[in-house]
Image (cartoon, rainbow, N blue to C red; front, side, top):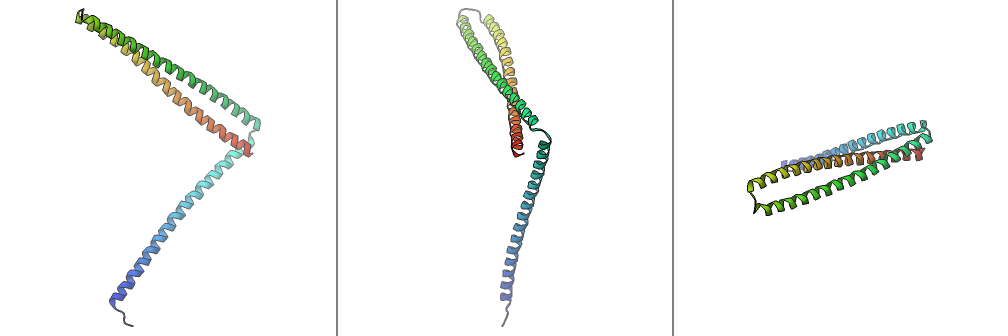
Length: 176
């Protein structure tokens, strides 16, 4: 049995490769166990939170839970109605803006037609004055539109949050 350096080197390379494979496998196992530990911790925390919620639900009578759910449902309906009214108001303001713009275009057309006959200086003053007034109205309508949109977003967010809370309370009630 003669051992040559080449054989020893080949064996060493094979051992190094197997060692790398084992090392990679160990790292993969460590990553998997870390992920599993995180999942177990999350499940424990979830279970603790569920137990706390169930404990709170046990101490409150069902009639109180039902009454709370009914009140929240009523509030949600009111918010939804308010959202409908705000949307209608927004549409009304937008149509008013469109009407104002059409009137403005009509006035501008009339001014242009009259400008062929009248003094351009007077027409420019009238045009500037009308443009400023119109811009003030457009700005006010734009501000109202932004406020209404923000109110709708807030109301919808509150409605969805309250709906989620109602679903949670109903689930807790049925679990009890």
